[in-house]
Image (tube, rainbow, N blue to C red):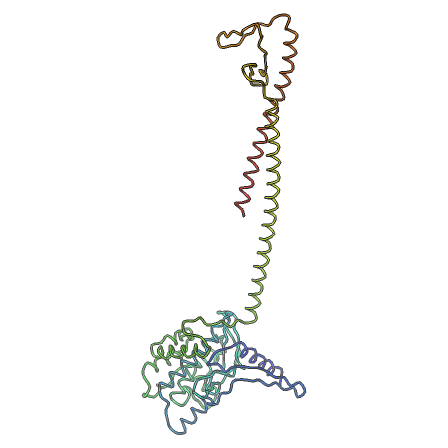
Length: 400
């Protein structure tokens, strides 16, 4: 094989491995015999032959196919092309060589699209192929004009194939390729035999429109009233063949690129989950530290309260305490003199012989006053600190 033939073979094998549809020839395996440099492709057996043999047989016997069979072939081929044109990875597979010889039949006369040797994958809706390939009878006008083309080129080839299935001859025939190219560019052809309905003839004319953007897509064809009932029946049978019920979703076949993308996203999610777990652990550690600080603050507050109790002056029946840093005095009452209250103020007459004791008592009370005032300030600071820790703890719990 030449290098181009090897590339074509590898392309076909890779495509067949990815495509899984009841109306596409099934790929099973490949066997490489390196001793004889031979590649064997194990594929589904189509014992019904191909459409080219069927058309040749009908032309020889002058026997036209039933319209119901034609519509069934059209439906199954359109479903196969939909699998190619609407790939799960967003790409578009253009067959580029759709003709009766590449459409096979199984024992139950079901269509099987095969021979993807000329197929090409377009990975974007705006991508266009430019290679001049295919069988001339079924080439689209844009291919004949050496213009870029997309999946609508397969719709033209499908229209030519269906026309030949009805008329038993291609829509465009000529003695040489130049004349054939001129007829394809003009897009003029005779009506299919009148035994077939006008609706089918109209649909084929839409598919054989010279302007590619005027041709219907695979979805438009499947929604056509002429084959709507056949499409419903075929989809039901396809679900049954795949072991699914009609109301169950079909499992999507992912390509290798799509699987790698899914694995990458899964790894990113795992990394984010690990980061969230580590953040939660840090928050829990901070919460434990705040709890410890809160307990320490409570202990300090308890010690401050006990200190306040120890520094608390004697009952008011024995002392008079005036609060404040400048007025905290505890003056003893005289056992012989009674205090008198004038204008709401307290006055006391101190005998001369008790003056020394009075000043000693006054010095002690001044020291107690200072300690009491300092304890009050510490208690207020500890209360503010406790409120701050409680607020931070609630914020952390809210973040979690």
